[in-house]
Amino acid sequence: MKLYRLLTEDDTSAFCHKVSLALSKGWELHGGPTYAFDAARGVMRCGQAVVKDVPGDYHPDMKLGEQ
Image (cartoon, rainbow, N blue to C red):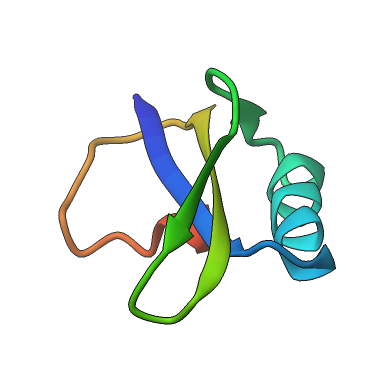
């Protein structure tokens, strides 16, 4: 089964670390990153979709970050 996650974070090194951690756990980039202004908080936000093939069946209670 293929899992999907959308990683988001403020535009700081924390975003890069979050994506790097996912990649080190076998997740793969899916498309390009996104970048948008969060007017409510006054900061730029980044996003990156990642996917991963894992054995088994999907269940909505899965902790995707632990896969």
